[in-house]
Each structure stands twice: as C-alpha cells, then as structure tokens.
Image 1: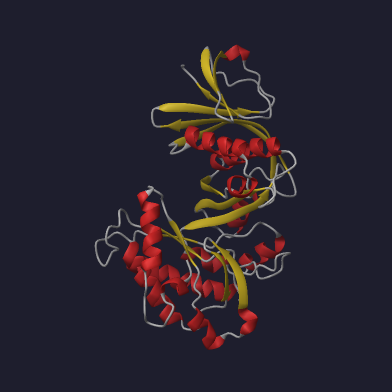
Image 2 (image 1 turned 135 degrees about the horizontal axis):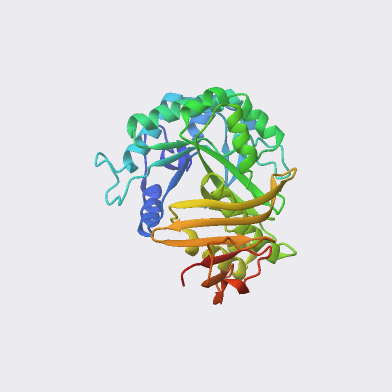
Length: 361
C-alpha cells in the first residue's frame, strides 16, 4: 500500500479503500503481509523534483508517483502509526469487523531497484542510508503501536552483485530493525532451485544475522510468456519450493504468473497439489539431498524430505536414488499433478519428477 492511498491530503486519512481490501482478504481467511510504500504526492512535492517520478505496477494498475525518501518523516510516521493501530486487532481504534490483527509489515519493496533494468523500473530513488532511516523509524513506530508485530526488511531483489552492494552498506545496522529477512527469486530456473536461499543465508551470516527467512516473491520463467518446456518448470516449481522449505526458508510466496498470464491449467494443478500436500506442515527432515552449486544458486539432483503435518507424514522424493529405508510395503504415490496410485514400495522408480508418498496406506 502507498501512503497516498490513505492520506491524499495532509492530515486527512481515508481508510475506506484499504478497509474494503482488508475485509475481503479476511473474509477469504487470508493471512496478510502488508507492504508499506512511504510515498504521498503532497509530501514528495515538498522536496523532490520531477526526476523522482516512477511508474510502478500495482494491483489497481500502473501508478505514476515520486519515490524519494519522505520529506516529512514526522507526518509519514504518524500515518504509519495510524495504519498499524487500525489493523492490529488490539480492540483500540480497530477497523470495525476486523476478524484478526495484521501482524506482519514489510517496509518497502526492492529499494535497490532504481531504474537500472530493461523496464526502467524504480521502486526507490535514494541511498542505502536513506532506506536505513526509513526502516529504522518505521520499525520503532510499528513496535510502539503493536509490540507483537513482526517487521520484514524490504525484499532483496536478487543476489546480483549490484543489489548485494546496496544492502552490504547498511546491513550491520539494519539487522537491528527487522525481525524477518526477506529475499526474492524472479525468473527462477532449474539453475536456481534454492530460490537464492543458499547465497542469502551466506550473506546474512557474513553480517552476523540469524533470523527467520521468508522468500516473498517467487516467479518462474518470464512473467507474461509461457516457457517452451512447461513440464520442466512444473517439476522445478515443486523441487525448488520443497528444497527451500527444507533448508531454512520459513515461508515461500509464489507469483501466480502461470495462472494469470500463461493460462496454464496444468501448472495450477501442480501448485494446488503442492499446497494440498504440504500446507501447514509442522516439521521437515532432510533424509538425503544432493545438489550442485551454479552461478545462480543450486541445481538439485536428489531430494528426499520427510514432512510432518499434524498426525500424517508425507515424503517428497526425486532424483536417481534408492527409496528411504522407512518406506516399505503398500503406499500411496501422488504425482505433481495430484493423480494418485496405490503401489508396493518395490515398484517405485524415482526420477527428476518429484512424487509425494504417503506411507502406511
């Protein structure tokens, strides 16, 4: 959300549009991560010229807005406190009919993307230290309004050197002003089936950071155009998501470009099967994994993972390897499209296409 969505004129808050969105999402039992974009037209005009304008994609369509650091930080923080207070679910000045509080707040999106790309996309026109000030003051304001809230750093656009350089400059200080580390994996391919997780963990470790990791944007292939080999993407979708979750990512958010733009029913089936099989898992164990480092990240070769979801167990397996010894007798095998078959474990032959196995069938 943009500051301007609520405060189009200084000192006048209009939550009606945001209220409608929140109610609709909560009606559908959606958990909400609210991303704050600290841009209001009237504020930006105080100290930023036309060179700060950027055209940004939003769920409502493209918007043209200046994207500099807030000119009046006091006004921005007052707005932020009002937003958190309205949706925190503490019973004080809450939205009427709020079903549950919003507890996750992301401070901006990909601030290191500043026009140096083929789309001339720019989410922020400012220095790393200016972003640090926004993050620091936003964190303190959110925690004051709701001590239970969790703050995410803005999504790191990728592990490309230019983006790493932006964050390197401030991370030793920034680490005190977010609860959850955040990275994005766009145009994911079979050469990055860790979704940047391995490189990101190494980057965090260099700065002495051991915090929860979310991957809040995962896109496969081109945003608008389907790949030549959609089957390979579908297999990679499962392998990469499972590998990332098993190796330390707490949450993975998929961009459903296959559904909205590719119009691929088969890929949607793969995604829905993945969710049906593993959603709300309590624990994941790595039985066996083999991968090779690539320039992008890792390419998985063997994956054997045991997920516990409540009182049931699901194995996710792929690659040329023997079955785990604990899988014996008759089992249910589910392919990535959700098709099910009861088999004897001795009949199963693993390949690069993952399968879900339910034991004790």
